[in-house]
Amino acid sequence: MSETETKKPARDPWDLPDVSGLVVGVLGGTGDQGRGLAYRLARAGQKVIIGSRAAERAREAAGAIGLGVEGADNAECARRADIVIVAVPWEGHAATLTALREELRGKLVVDCVNPLGFDKQGAYALKPEEGSAAQQAAALLPESRVTAAFHHLSAVLLQDETVEEIDTDVLVLGEKRADTDLVQALAARIPGMRGVFAGRLRGAHQVEALVANLISVNRRYKAHAGLRLTDVHGPADGQADGPGGR
Image 1 (cartoon, one colour):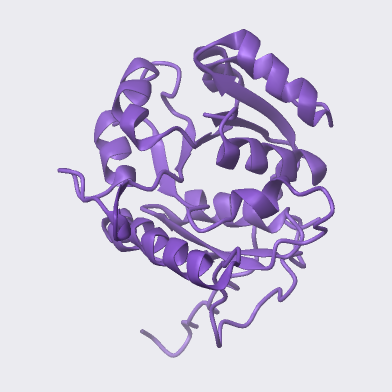
Image 2: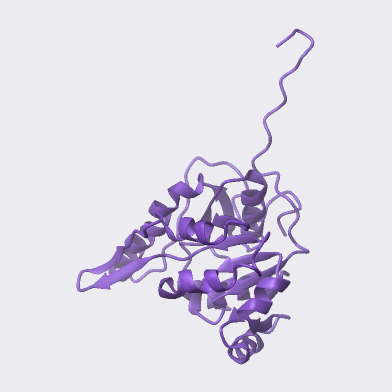
């Protein structure tokens, strides 16, 4: 580096894009987690479409939420959305994404599916052949931009209209910063949340697996536990200073 060259300043990790005008589709939006995310994002002012295998079921769920949420079959939901959250049951994950490969081409896909098994000892993590649900999504959707986020949220709290803020950090994983920044900004639309970059998709398995531990915590302490990261300085209340916040 010559004397006349200057090093570029480090980019502020909390300088996030404005996502307020983007349409969010939620595949599996009639399930507890999907419905909860749809409600919170719509309540924050986001345009949301709920997707389901049955369009009528999606429209019923959307009507129950209100807030301008629409319902459609999964294919229409994927086509109309800018960002697509995958919140389907693990058992239907591969089949759903395979069927929607064309509709999801070029889309930003946010996988929040947790592969879990249950037995008499409680919940335990499953490890898909690809390594994680998010990596399976990336393998099935080679022309989509796959990220992983929203794994550790309580569906009970998400759907509780009396809860004003969801006190948690959202771990966001992905291959490209432009994509993870968008997902972080989307998380920050919900009061109380922060989206925090947590690595590439190869690290998604341990993020997905941690849900099994949170289930054990919740059962023992009768709680709805989430995550907060220490010593990560930024918007403490989930409302970012930049345009990505509210």
